[in-house]
Amino acid sequence: MKEKLLIIGASGHGKVVADIAIKMNKWKSIAFLDDDESINTSMGLEVIGKTSDVFTYKDEADLFVAIGNNDTREKIQKEFEAEGLSIASLVHPSAVIGTDVEVGIGTAVMAGVVINSASMIGKGCIINTSCSLDHDNMIEDYVHISPGANLAGTVRIGKGSWIGIGSVISNNVNICRSCKVGAGAVVVKDITEPGIYVGVPVRRVDK
Image (cartoon, rainbow, N blue to C red; front, side):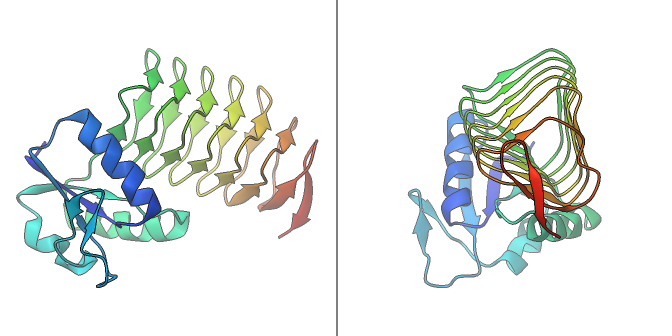
């Protein structure tokens, strides 16, 4: 771990990420990179350049991609990984992390989250405020689990999927890659085709 942390993206998600990093108290300095030249500071932290400036800090800073869009976050993080940059994972001190839980690089675990034992969280995920993941969950890379979502035991979420706020996923359910599950939805059986799913129980409404 390096002494400096650079956060890519200074808007809403970046602010929450910065708050986690500050509370972790592991870096001597924290700053943002953002392509919006009108933003000079965020969360009281300085914006010191654009995303393309990141390579200037390759040897002195850990990086975190704080972009909410799953596809964009994946694209940027993969580029950084290919260039050998150091990518951090961030876990809020209030999160409850069980035994034998793995959290991939570039993943943010936010305040009030519970991840129970033997679960695996992939790279570049957003495990958002006060959601819960029970035992033996498998969350693949670049997934967003929204605030207040509840996943029962032995759930698998495929790469790049988005699980909406307040949604419920029953035990032993598999959701394939590139799915969007709407707010408040209830998933009681496997989803095997990418698309948008809403309702109680969910139904597919779009590709």
